[in-house]
Length: 318
Image 1: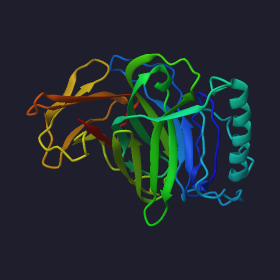
Image 2: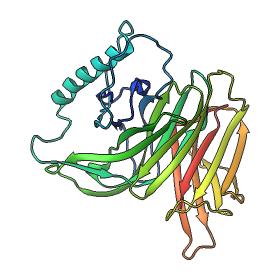
Image 3: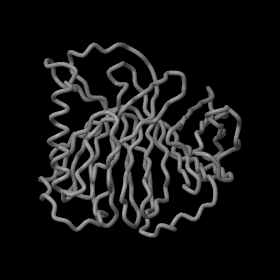
């Protein structure tokens, strides 16, 4: 298992191409947080296993099953180093930064780990060579100590289809002063060098698992979309079954204007396409009008938003 340590603000890759089946913990960086339904996403980065084109020597991976923690920012890797040694340097340097900064919040008390509830995910489901997968995860929190999510990242398998498990968790000390506050936020995991073929990311929250199925290609012209494309899959919050006929509304997150509105098809999917333009920040609202009482759910995606010619797939539970 490989590991690295990050400080806030860095978006350099966690090169998971060097990883055996393992567990990584990634801290997200937050610059702003809102409780009013606007959730600026933040970013961490990983590289998919088995896809690294660099053939330079690497450090042998530690044994499977050893926990990895990745805290926000690592100084940029020295390009003159082999990637294996660069990752090791990042780990050591980041660890020193972590100790100096006192990221634990306290020298006393035990560590508390809480899996956060995930309500929706969004991601570009077709990734060409040289492009990046943006896995956007919306979660709820109930205290100030849960506001900043860390991703635990486990490589479950690499053959025949790579499967990765991503779990958003809050990690803090038992002596930290946590105040009650209810809110929702979005964290983003960036994944580079996906290689070619199907990739599955299982996003595990305390309420269940949401699945992101991604198709990657080594062809830089693999994605042929000519505009924005959104595919919204509506699932039942209690078990993940698709909900045909759910009402879906897509709005512009900047001006609040309605972009599209209608009902999901028999597979629980609602599709929206529009011509290219600036990066699209959007709000998706889902309603089950036949339920008693009416059930609703929302997802707000800001930066990074949906990109032109990069189809975006959304899974939202209600």
